Image 1: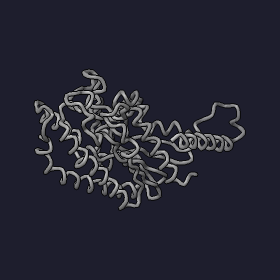
Image 2 (image 1 turned 180 degrees about the horizontal axis):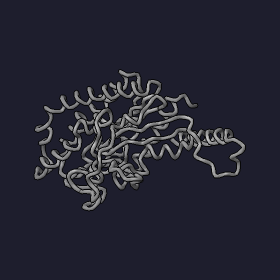
Image 3 (image 1 turned 60 degrees about the vertical axis):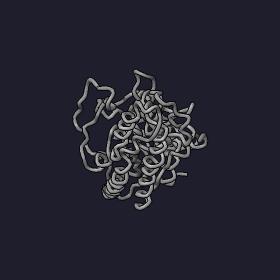
Image 4 (image 1 turned 90 degrees about the vertical axis):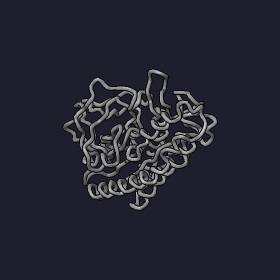
Length: 324
Protein backbone atom coordinates (compact mmCIF):
# COMPACT_ATOMS: atom_id res chain seq x y z
CA UNK A 1 0.00 0.00 0.00
CA UNK A 2 2.96 2.34 -0.35
CA UNK A 3 1.27 3.92 -3.36
CA UNK A 4 -1.73 4.77 -1.19
CA UNK A 5 0.44 6.52 1.40
CA UNK A 6 2.23 8.45 -1.37
CA UNK A 7 -1.14 9.46 -2.74
CA UNK A 8 -2.28 10.63 0.68
CA UNK A 9 0.86 12.69 1.23
CA UNK A 10 0.51 14.42 -2.13
CA UNK A 11 -3.18 15.11 -1.59
CA UNK A 12 -2.58 16.37 1.94
CA UNK A 13 0.13 18.75 0.73
CA UNK A 14 -2.08 19.99 -2.09
CA UNK A 15 -4.96 20.66 0.30
CA UNK A 16 -2.67 22.55 2.68
CA UNK A 17 -1.35 24.70 -0.18
CA UNK A 18 -4.87 25.41 -1.41
CA UNK A 19 -5.98 26.43 2.08
CA UNK A 20 -2.90 28.66 2.51
CA UNK A 21 -3.71 30.45 -0.74
CA UNK A 22 -7.04 31.51 0.77
CA UNK A 23 -5.52 33.20 3.86
CA UNK A 24 -6.31 36.95 3.72
CA UNK A 25 -3.32 39.27 3.30
CA UNK A 26 -3.86 40.95 6.66
CA UNK A 27 -3.01 37.68 8.43
CA UNK A 28 0.31 37.26 6.63
CA UNK A 29 3.11 36.73 9.15
CA UNK A 30 0.73 35.92 12.00
CA UNK A 31 0.59 32.47 13.56
CA UNK A 32 -1.95 30.74 11.31
CA UNK A 33 -5.08 29.16 12.68
CA UNK A 34 -5.77 25.59 11.66
CA UNK A 35 -6.94 25.61 8.07
CA UNK A 36 -10.45 24.38 7.37
CA UNK A 37 -10.38 20.86 5.99
CA UNK A 38 -11.72 20.14 2.53
CA UNK A 39 -13.92 17.32 3.86
CA UNK A 40 -15.44 16.50 7.25
CA UNK A 41 -14.98 12.91 8.42
CA UNK A 42 -16.58 11.31 11.49
CA UNK A 43 -15.13 8.00 12.75
CA UNK A 44 -17.53 5.78 14.70
CA UNK A 45 -16.97 2.36 16.17
CA UNK A 46 -15.85 0.07 18.96
CA UNK A 47 -12.43 -0.89 20.34
CA UNK A 48 -11.26 -2.25 16.97
CA UNK A 49 -11.54 1.36 15.78
CA UNK A 50 -10.60 3.18 18.98
CA UNK A 51 -7.39 1.21 19.60
CA UNK A 52 -7.76 0.65 23.37
CA UNK A 53 -4.75 -1.56 24.13
CA UNK A 54 -1.18 -0.31 24.76
CA UNK A 55 0.01 -2.22 21.68
CA UNK A 56 -2.15 0.19 19.65
CA UNK A 57 -0.52 3.30 21.11
CA UNK A 58 -1.01 5.80 23.89
CA UNK A 59 -4.38 7.09 25.06
CA UNK A 60 -4.69 10.69 23.85
CA UNK A 61 -8.13 11.74 25.17
CA UNK A 62 -8.02 15.30 26.53
CA UNK A 63 -9.90 15.42 28.77
CA UNK A 64 -9.99 11.69 29.26
CA UNK A 65 -13.45 10.22 28.69
CA UNK A 66 -12.75 6.52 29.15
CA UNK A 67 -13.23 5.50 25.51
CA UNK A 68 -9.51 4.68 25.26
CA UNK A 69 -8.86 6.10 21.78
CA UNK A 70 -5.16 5.60 21.09
CA UNK A 71 -2.79 7.55 18.87
CA UNK A 72 -1.85 4.63 16.60
CA UNK A 73 -5.42 3.51 15.89
CA UNK A 74 -6.37 3.63 12.23
CA UNK A 75 -8.44 6.86 12.34
CA UNK A 76 -5.50 8.71 13.87
CA UNK A 77 -3.03 7.19 11.40
CA UNK A 78 -5.20 8.29 8.47
CA UNK A 79 -5.70 11.73 10.01
CA UNK A 80 -1.94 12.25 10.16
CA UNK A 81 -1.47 10.95 6.60
CA UNK A 82 -4.20 13.11 5.10
CA UNK A 83 -3.10 16.36 6.68
CA UNK A 84 -5.69 19.07 6.05
CA UNK A 85 -7.57 17.20 3.33
CA UNK A 86 -10.03 15.64 5.78
CA UNK A 87 -10.96 16.97 9.22
CA UNK A 88 -11.45 14.06 11.63
CA UNK A 89 -13.92 13.84 14.48
CA UNK A 90 -13.19 10.54 16.22
CA UNK A 91 -15.88 9.45 18.70
CA UNK A 92 -15.17 5.71 18.56
CA UNK A 93 -15.32 4.09 21.99
CA UNK A 94 -14.09 0.83 23.45
CA UNK A 95 -16.91 -1.65 24.18
CA UNK A 96 -19.44 0.24 22.04
CA UNK A 97 -22.37 -1.74 20.70
CA UNK A 98 -24.20 -0.81 17.51
CA UNK A 99 -26.95 0.68 19.69
CA UNK A 100 -24.34 2.86 21.42
CA UNK A 101 -23.41 4.20 18.00
CA UNK A 102 -27.03 4.77 17.03
CA UNK A 103 -29.03 6.08 19.98
CA UNK A 104 -27.81 5.05 23.42
CA UNK A 105 -25.48 6.97 25.73
CA UNK A 106 -22.61 4.67 26.68
CA UNK A 107 -20.88 4.26 30.01
CA UNK A 108 -17.27 3.85 28.83
CA UNK A 109 -15.11 1.18 30.38
CA UNK A 110 -11.74 2.94 30.51
CA UNK A 111 -8.97 0.37 30.80
CA UNK A 112 -11.41 -2.18 32.19
CA UNK A 113 -11.13 -4.99 29.64
CA UNK A 114 -13.33 -7.65 31.28
CA UNK A 115 -12.49 -9.58 33.30
CA UNK A 116 -8.82 -8.83 33.88
CA UNK A 117 -8.13 -5.22 34.84
CA UNK A 118 -9.63 -2.09 36.35
CA UNK A 119 -9.06 1.59 35.68
CA UNK A 120 -8.51 3.76 38.78
CA UNK A 121 -10.65 6.50 37.18
CA UNK A 122 -13.53 4.13 36.39
CA UNK A 123 -16.48 4.70 36.16
CA UNK A 124 -16.53 7.56 33.66
CA UNK A 125 -19.61 9.71 32.94
CA UNK A 126 -21.70 8.48 29.99
CA UNK A 127 -20.65 9.61 26.53
CA UNK A 128 -23.36 10.63 24.02
CA UNK A 129 -24.53 8.31 21.25
CA UNK A 130 -21.84 8.42 18.61
CA UNK A 131 -24.30 9.31 15.84
CA UNK A 132 -24.77 12.73 17.46
CA UNK A 133 -21.34 13.68 16.05
CA UNK A 134 -22.79 13.32 12.54
CA UNK A 135 -24.69 16.14 10.87
CA UNK A 136 -25.73 17.70 7.54
CA UNK A 137 -22.19 18.98 6.95
CA UNK A 138 -20.55 15.56 7.34
CA UNK A 139 -18.95 14.40 4.09
CA UNK A 140 -17.85 10.89 5.03
CA UNK A 141 -18.50 8.50 7.92
CA UNK A 142 -16.53 5.40 8.82
CA UNK A 143 -18.02 2.88 11.20
CA UNK A 144 -16.62 -0.34 12.64
CA UNK A 145 -19.06 -2.02 15.02
CA UNK A 146 -21.00 -5.22 15.62
CA UNK A 147 -18.67 -7.38 17.68
CA UNK A 148 -20.03 -6.17 21.02
CA UNK A 149 -23.63 -6.52 19.87
CA UNK A 150 -22.74 -10.11 18.99
CA UNK A 151 -21.16 -10.45 22.44
CA UNK A 152 -17.83 -11.64 21.08
CA UNK A 153 -15.85 -10.81 24.24
CA UNK A 154 -18.28 -12.82 26.34
CA UNK A 155 -18.13 -15.70 23.87
CA UNK A 156 -14.34 -15.71 24.10
CA UNK A 157 -14.46 -15.73 27.88
CA UNK A 158 -16.91 -18.65 27.89
CA UNK A 159 -14.63 -20.53 25.50
CA UNK A 160 -11.67 -19.90 27.81
CA UNK A 161 -13.60 -21.26 30.78
CA UNK A 162 -15.01 -24.31 29.02
CA UNK A 163 -11.70 -25.19 27.40
CA UNK A 164 -9.81 -25.08 30.68
CA UNK A 165 -8.77 -28.60 31.63
CA UNK A 166 -9.89 -30.06 28.29
CA UNK A 167 -6.34 -30.71 27.17
CA UNK A 168 -7.20 -28.95 23.93
CA UNK A 169 -9.59 -31.71 22.89
CA UNK A 170 -13.16 -31.31 21.65
CA UNK A 171 -15.45 -28.33 21.08
CA UNK A 172 -16.96 -27.53 24.50
CA UNK A 173 -17.69 -23.91 23.59
CA UNK A 174 -19.41 -24.75 20.31
CA UNK A 175 -21.42 -27.41 22.10
CA UNK A 176 -22.59 -24.84 24.65
CA UNK A 177 -23.18 -21.75 22.49
CA UNK A 178 -23.75 -22.78 18.88
CA UNK A 179 -27.53 -22.65 19.13
CA UNK A 180 -27.39 -19.01 20.30
CA UNK A 181 -25.29 -17.62 17.46
CA UNK A 182 -27.95 -17.30 14.70
CA UNK A 183 -30.15 -15.14 16.94
CA UNK A 184 -27.17 -13.01 17.93
CA UNK A 185 -26.22 -12.49 14.29
CA UNK A 186 -29.82 -11.60 13.44
CA UNK A 187 -29.76 -8.91 16.12
CA UNK A 188 -26.52 -7.52 14.71
CA UNK A 189 -28.20 -7.31 11.31
CA UNK A 190 -31.28 -5.51 12.63
CA UNK A 191 -29.30 -3.08 14.77
CA UNK A 192 -26.84 -2.38 11.99
CA UNK A 193 -29.64 -1.63 9.55
CA UNK A 194 -31.18 0.80 12.05
CA UNK A 195 -27.79 2.45 12.58
CA UNK A 196 -27.20 3.03 8.88
CA UNK A 197 -30.71 4.43 8.45
CA UNK A 198 -30.01 6.86 11.30
CA UNK A 199 -26.65 7.91 9.88
CA UNK A 200 -28.12 8.57 6.44
CA UNK A 201 -30.96 10.56 7.99
CA UNK A 202 -28.60 12.71 10.04
CA UNK A 203 -26.07 13.17 7.21
CA UNK A 204 -28.02 12.77 3.95
CA UNK A 205 -25.08 13.72 1.72
CA UNK A 206 -22.38 11.70 3.51
CA UNK A 207 -20.64 8.66 2.12
CA UNK A 208 -20.66 5.81 4.66
CA UNK A 209 -17.72 3.40 4.76
CA UNK A 210 -18.31 0.27 6.85
CA UNK A 211 -15.22 -1.45 8.21
CA UNK A 212 -15.16 -5.17 8.89
CA UNK A 213 -13.08 -7.14 11.37
CA UNK A 214 -9.60 -8.51 10.53
CA UNK A 215 -8.40 -12.09 10.54
CA UNK A 216 -8.15 -13.11 14.17
CA UNK A 217 -7.92 -16.91 13.92
CA UNK A 218 -5.75 -18.63 11.28
CA UNK A 219 -7.17 -21.11 8.79
CA UNK A 220 -4.71 -23.66 10.20
CA UNK A 221 -5.37 -23.68 13.94
CA UNK A 222 -2.50 -26.10 14.53
CA UNK A 223 -0.45 -22.86 14.66
CA UNK A 224 -2.23 -22.00 17.91
CA UNK A 225 -0.63 -23.39 21.05
CA UNK A 226 -3.06 -24.62 23.65
CA UNK A 227 -2.60 -22.90 27.04
CA UNK A 228 -0.47 -20.12 25.52
CA UNK A 229 -1.91 -16.97 27.09
CA UNK A 230 -0.27 -14.79 24.47
CA UNK A 231 -2.43 -16.62 21.96
CA UNK A 232 -5.87 -18.05 22.79
CA UNK A 233 -4.96 -19.69 26.11
CA UNK A 234 -7.34 -22.56 26.89
CA UNK A 235 -9.62 -22.29 23.84
CA UNK A 236 -9.44 -25.60 22.00
CA UNK A 237 -8.43 -25.84 18.31
CA UNK A 238 -11.89 -27.18 17.49
CA UNK A 239 -13.54 -24.20 19.12
CA UNK A 240 -11.18 -21.85 17.31
CA UNK A 241 -12.30 -23.35 14.00
CA UNK A 242 -15.91 -22.83 15.07
CA UNK A 243 -15.28 -19.25 16.18
CA UNK A 244 -13.67 -18.44 12.83
CA UNK A 245 -16.18 -20.15 10.53
CA UNK A 246 -19.47 -19.80 12.40
CA UNK A 247 -19.02 -16.60 14.42
CA UNK A 248 -16.46 -14.15 12.97
CA UNK A 249 -16.88 -14.82 9.26
CA UNK A 250 -20.70 -14.58 9.49
CA UNK A 251 -20.33 -11.37 11.51
CA UNK A 252 -18.38 -9.79 8.65
CA UNK A 253 -20.91 -11.12 6.16
CA UNK A 254 -23.77 -9.62 8.18
CA UNK A 255 -22.09 -6.20 8.17
CA UNK A 256 -21.29 -6.40 4.46
CA UNK A 257 -24.89 -7.34 3.65
CA UNK A 258 -26.31 -4.42 5.62
CA UNK A 259 -23.86 -2.04 3.96
CA UNK A 260 -24.89 -3.29 0.53
CA UNK A 261 -28.57 -2.87 1.29
CA UNK A 262 -27.97 0.82 2.01
CA UNK A 263 -25.71 1.34 -1.00
CA UNK A 264 -22.70 1.90 1.22
CA UNK A 265 -19.08 0.82 0.98
CA UNK A 266 -17.80 -2.22 2.87
CA UNK A 267 -14.08 -2.52 3.60
CA UNK A 268 -13.16 -6.08 4.41
CA UNK A 269 -9.95 -6.61 6.36
CA UNK A 270 -9.77 -10.41 6.44
CA UNK A 271 -7.92 -10.92 3.16
CA UNK A 272 -5.24 -8.29 3.79
CA UNK A 273 -4.61 -9.64 7.31
CA UNK A 274 -4.94 -13.34 6.53
CA UNK A 275 -1.32 -14.23 7.40
CA UNK A 276 -1.27 -12.03 10.51
CA UNK A 277 -3.63 -13.73 12.95
CA UNK A 278 -3.08 -14.04 16.69
CA UNK A 279 -1.20 -17.30 16.06
CA UNK A 280 1.10 -16.05 13.28
CA UNK A 281 4.67 -14.91 13.93
CA UNK A 282 3.94 -11.49 12.43
CA UNK A 283 0.65 -11.04 14.23
CA UNK A 284 -1.47 -7.93 13.76
CA UNK A 285 -3.90 -8.95 16.51
CA UNK A 286 -2.73 -9.64 20.05
CA UNK A 287 -3.88 -12.65 22.03
CA UNK A 288 -5.47 -12.75 25.48
CA UNK A 289 -2.29 -11.06 26.72
CA UNK A 290 0.31 -9.14 24.74
CA UNK A 291 2.81 -10.08 27.45
CA UNK A 292 1.67 -12.61 30.04
CA UNK A 293 0.73 -11.93 32.81
CA UNK A 294 0.90 -8.14 32.87
CA UNK A 295 -0.28 -6.71 29.53
CA UNK A 296 -3.92 -7.56 28.82
CA UNK A 297 -5.04 -7.33 25.19
CA UNK A 298 -8.06 -9.66 25.06
CA UNK A 299 -7.74 -10.18 21.29
CA UNK A 300 -7.41 -6.65 19.85
CA UNK A 301 -5.41 -5.26 16.91
CA UNK A 302 -1.94 -3.90 17.57
CA UNK A 303 -0.34 -0.94 15.79
CA UNK A 304 0.53 -3.05 12.74
CA UNK A 305 -3.08 -4.18 12.48
CA UNK A 306 -4.26 -0.60 12.67
CA UNK A 307 -1.73 0.43 10.00
CA UNK A 308 -3.18 -2.22 7.70
CA UNK A 309 -6.69 -1.00 8.44
CA UNK A 310 -5.53 2.57 7.74
CA UNK A 311 -4.18 1.51 4.34
CA UNK A 312 -7.45 -0.18 3.37
CA UNK A 313 -9.80 2.42 4.82
CA UNK A 314 -7.93 5.44 3.49
CA UNK A 315 -8.17 4.10 -0.06
CA UNK A 316 -11.92 3.60 0.42
CA UNK A 317 -12.30 7.10 1.89
CA UNK A 318 -10.65 8.72 -1.11
CA UNK A 319 -12.69 6.64 -3.55
CA UNK A 320 -15.93 7.43 -1.70
CA UNK A 321 -15.16 11.14 -1.89
CA UNK A 322 -14.13 10.93 -5.54
CA UNK A 323 -10.65 12.25 -4.75
CA UNK A 324 -8.26 10.96 -7.40
